[in-house]
Amino acid sequence: MSSTLGDFLRARRQAMPPNKVGLPLGDDRRRTPGLRRDEVALLADVSVDYYTRLEQGRERRPSDRVLEALARVFHLDAEATEHLHQLARPRVRSRGAEDGGDQVNAHVLRLMDRWNHVPACVCNRRTDVLVHNTLSAALVEGLEHTDNFLRMIFLSSAASGLLWVDWEREACSMVAHLRAALGVDHEDPFLLQLVEELLTESEDFRRMWARHDVGLIRSDIVRLRHPLVGELDLWHESFSVDSAPGQRLFTLQAEPGSPSEEALTKLSAMSPRIH
Image: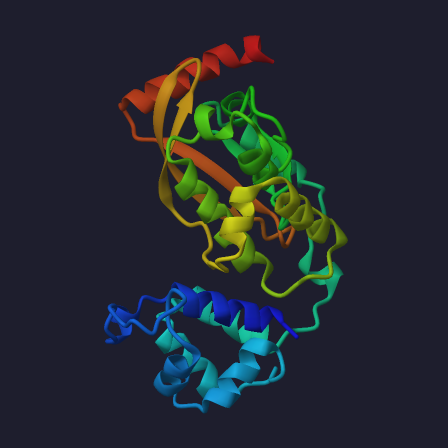
């Protein structure tokens, strides 16, 4: 018997190096990576039987004290700790209240269209790209599955060599973002279909999904490689679309006066010919 909570705990336990919690690495009794169940139980001040039941899905309602203790043992950040609490106490959610649908507000569309030197797109909770502006579409020209970021990064044959310079880092970040953004909401049939498709079609996605990493994509530098204008270092920032819960506006900006800004200017000038 397994559970989403148990899967998360097992993945965190196996990913935690013993030396990070003050245990020696050179223990001959270790047959698996990470910590043993008895070590986690000791550090969290619970019985081995109780912790084993948590991992096996036979104990589904741990107290806040136990959850906070486990968060400390696994060195979880605030987002991962919140995710742990959500797994232990799933909320009944109103789909209508939390999902803004796939219609992008006309005011958001006009705003994006005016950004001639800022690639921008709007995505929903399933990472479907609801709309690209012209420059964003030009950046992903030549890739497959440009209507969904996860499909694009894992299933496009050119993704790892054409667009993302550090593909592994960006792919891991996308998977962790999906975990954090969706929490324990497994009721969306389109989401379930997407995850199943990626698990079936991509060995890399299977490997990253199994780690249960959690983390929202925040401000960061993204390094891209475009076949027409070369490499670009762009600052990524995203914003919640308050008029449509579940939608986010993703933007990329170049440092003023930088080679990347010049490259975006060139790409913007080419965009009408591309499309």
